[in-house]
Length: 345
Ligand code: PEP
Ligand code: MN
Image (cartoon, rainbow, N blue to C red; front, side, top):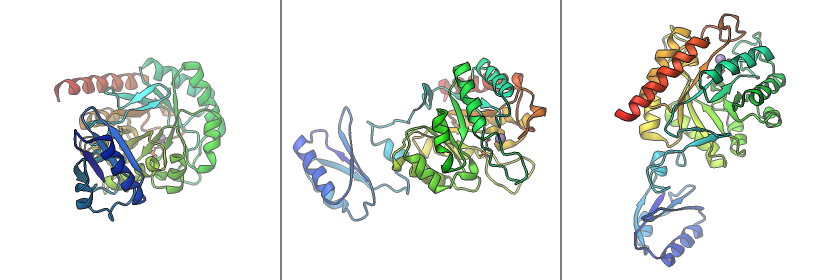
């Protein structure tokens, strides 16, 4: 529930109102804008009567939230914070959602020191902002290679120091958190297979480290936003969303890139930055560029591109990883499109 105070409401009226709400057993979130004060009430507010609140001194309007997610909704955030504010997430100095197109690129998996260093060099040269690389790979088949584990995190952390670029890697279990902290991984990716792993989401909600929350491939958009809400309401507001393709009846591409979800999140539903992963969404190297441009057209704040110095030799996801010239082309055309759209939309 959101309470908008009158412009001329006094401090005493505000204090009395807050005491009253706290008296009902609710926490309040007070946002002082240039024009007026807005109060957000957390928790289940169904027992608070709108008429009673409207009758209190200094109150102009009361809006009951209609969504099952609140802290990550536009409805809430556009009323709080002075209005109209999207969140910008800071990953060790790299901003996501700040009005530029953030690019995260790197191999599907960290395979060796040579491979991750060569990748970091290409990613840096291409002008990407963040280096990605999986150390713990959640493979579908139990006989597939599952990544280098801790050694992968160590190599990624070394590449970060050597090439001065923040790094992102996927955490697949709560038991790995200490390792991610030990190597100072800058952003934790929750992969799509863990997108609804509530224990993991609760644990990440208790950290400050930014989380890249991928959408689980069978999750409706508003349920996905409740997964993000879970992290934010537990205490970590550094969440970035990522559409990576959903299940569909069609098997030609690996997944179905849901660009509608990107525009719905961006223009109607949430304040959180939203990225696209056209690599996993298509599963085909040739289709990564058009899918990236579609995502930018839909309003994405950033892209995750899987690249490999020699894609044909990649140990995982070889069909979708792009090479150096392809990465450079994707970044340049996507940024060009993003900037053009910002000026003309
Ligand atoms: C990945 O990013 O390497 C990955 C496994 O992605 P997803 O969880 O989207 O399949
Ligand atoms: Mn992959």
